[in-house]
Amino acid sequence: MSEVASPRPGALARAWDSDFLYSFRHSPVALVSALVLVVVVASAVFSHWLAPHDPFDLASLSLMDSFKPPVFTGADANWAYPLGTDDQGRDVLSGIMYGTRISLLVGVLAIGFALTVGITVGLVAGYVGGAVDSLLMRMADVQLTFPAILIALLVDGVVRAVLPREFHDQVELYVLVFAIGIARWPQFARTVRGSTLVERGREYVMAARVIGLSSRKIMVSHILPNVLGPVLVIATLNLGLAILDEATLSFLGVGLPPTQPSLGTLIRIGNDFLFSGEWWVTMFPGITLAVLVLSINLLGDWLRDALNPRLR
Image: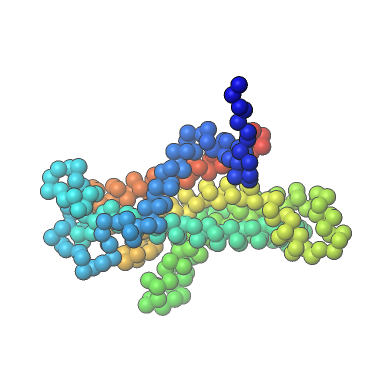
């Protein structure tokens, strides 16, 4: 008789056999999206070692290498520049890898800032209630009536007007993070507020009040862990939107400077040469941006379904 294999012991085995990872392993869309996202993020994070060239090293640039076509076109191609070069002779592939890192950095920091503001406002509004709840939610409602990109443009313009011109390039990254983050906090606040209204009437919250815990302790240690599920889903979906916001602002010329090219900046630079035949300068950064955002959104859709108990 063959021996029956005993279940794998330990917390790792239990996590592997959980409903969450089971759903992930049996979802082809989630697997492919995760694989694509890992490849793009890894190439961006480790671009300093993986990129064929350093697009920020001005000493290595040569105008004689400008507008080299991709190698698969065959005409005047150079394998040192697999995806061709731009008007300054910079390698397009290296620019994409470095630019993706900046776009991801801005998107993650902006969503982190929006999460912090939204969770704080939502917890306070839902737990305190009354006039405080009404005031905070009306502020969120007013902001939701405007597109996020317009809010980001307004904030960026105000900050640029206040700061001296010589500081613009130095603080533009932080301005972008603040502008995008402050434009996206209302969605997190309304979600957390709705979940907090449900949780604050439960027995464990009442018990915490009886034993004398402060409101801050109850909100942070008891209510917050129980409202994070929907927030994580919204954060995943908004990460792709934040990256698109950054790309849009950079394409409009109010984002990061050319010395710190993100994907949006690369697309804007290449757009000037699109109709003169050098299509690869803007095409490949655009494809990278689309693939990055699409993979994040597909993972967000899967995460929403995986965390929904009605679909289990």
